[in-house]
Image 1: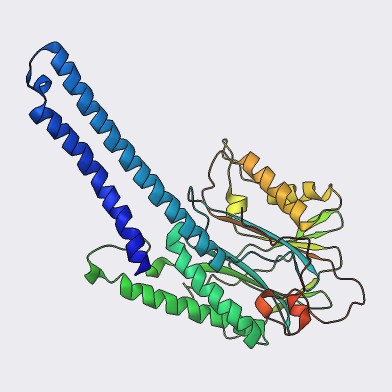
Image 2 (image 1 turned 90 degrees about the vertical axis):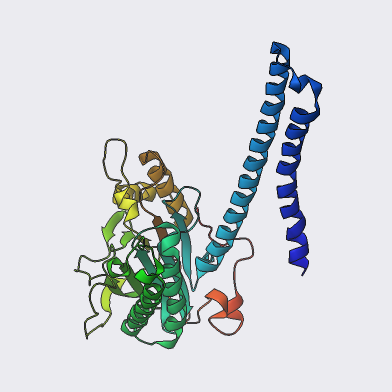
Length: 364
C-alpha cells in the first residue's frame, strides 16, 4: 500500500506536466489576440511559444528516461551482488582478487561466472563462461552458481559436483524451452538447442594439491617464481550442453600450488580482446610483466592485467571478461582448520574470521 501511494504521485506528475505544457500552447493559440494575427511579429511570437513548449516536453521526456535508466542500473547492481557476490580477500589461507568486464555497455553482469568456497574437502573453485553475454546469459549463470554453491558441500568427489552442474544446466534449458515455445509467437534470440557453457572446476587441498575437471574452458596460468605456464596441457572435456558427460569423471591431479605460487583463472574474452590492428591480447605476457613488481599480490596482478587490457583494447570488449587470481599464502606446517569460508560454510569462529582492515574484492 505504501509503495502504491509513493508511485502514484510520480505517475500523476509524469502525466500532468506534458498536459500542462499542451494546455499552455492551446490556450495561447485560441485565446491570445497576437496568435490570431498574420503579421511577421505575430508569427515569430507564436513560433517562439510553440518552440518553448516543445523544448519543455523534450526535456521532460529526457529526464524521465534518465530516471528510469538510473533505476535499471540500480536493479542491475543488486542482481550483480546476488549473482557474483564479492569475494573476501582471503579464504582458507588463499589470497584472492577477482574482476569482471561486461561486453554490454553500461552493464555490470554478463555470462561469466566464478565462485570460491572453502569446504571440508578443500577450497573449491568454479570458473564458467555461458554462451553469449548480457542479460540473456544471466539466468544460466545464476542456475549454475546456485547449483555449485550447494553441491560443493554435499559431494565429496569433484566429478559428482560437475554432474550436479550438468543437471542444473539441463533443467534450466528445459524451463527456457517451455518459455520460448513457438506458440509464443516470436523467435527466441538464443535458441536453447545452441546453448552451451564452459566450466572449470578446481579443488585446492590443504597440502596444496590441485585437482581439476575442465569442460571446454581455458586452462588457468600458474605463476611460480619467475615463470608463467599453463597449469596443464591436457585435452579438456567438451562444454556442457552439446554432449553428455562421460561415465568416468575422475578429477585429474594437476600438481601442487606451493606457498607463494598463484593461479590465474580467466574466460576466453581476455585472450580474444583485440587492438586497433586486430592483434590478440597476450594474457601470458601481461602476467609475466606483473611478476617484475614485488611483492606481486593478487590485487596487484589483477590491476596490472586490467591496465594492460584496457590499454590494448580500442573500446568495449567484444565478449565478457572475468579474471580470478588465487595465491597460496599458507605458512608451511600450518594446521588444517579452514578460515575465511564463504557465508558461514565452515562452522565455528574460523568461518567468521576475516581481516578487519581489508575489503571484499569488487567487480570492475
